[in-house]
Image 1 (spheres, helix red, strand yellow):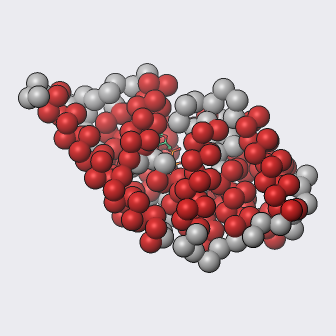
Image 2: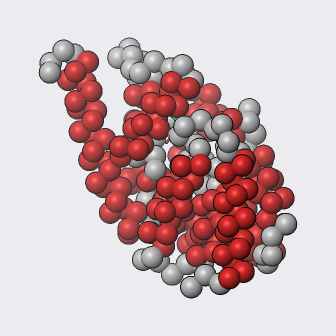
Length: 220
Ligand code: ADP
Ligand code: NI
């Protein structure tokens, strides 16, 4: 059960996050946060975790995504830390939430994650679920459009060996992102519930790609 004090912290965090994300790109806006929050609670219901930490980490995890801050990965954790210091929260919990925010991101999958906790596992899975399936497809094309990328270019192959900085600056067509990230996520889920939901969403993306290429080639 969430105490009255925790419920107040959650409410003010929601207000803060909504304000910070006004005007955000469609795949990283308040609705992304809301979905990750809901996915987190769903996954957490099968895990023995601290729900307040899971909730606050889900709500604050994309407060200032480095992609929209010239690649600076410190802005988000700093903003979240400043905000959490205004709340009635233990130092231990605040530090844990910041560690989760610092370590949640994929970054091409070739970065070493230097912090682990069950709460991070849950929120990371919830964030990954929102990157796949129907929502994942929509977010990816929205981001590609935001960056004025091509939908697809058969002459540009996917690159699975990217360093974190290459991953961040890649200008490849949006379809490549499926191979560089989205289709890899199913094997990287941390929790049982996450894996289960990911399988269904993964199958939907494969179906989408099959149809996409058939239409591209004029076969259907
Ligand atoms: P992470 O924070 O896990 O590194 P990102 O913020 O890079 O994840 O990606 C979140 C979502 O933004 C992706 O799932 C995708 O929908 C979109 N996105 C990020 N990079 C790209 C890209 N190069 N092309 C298309 N979509 C992208
Ligand atoms: Ni996210």
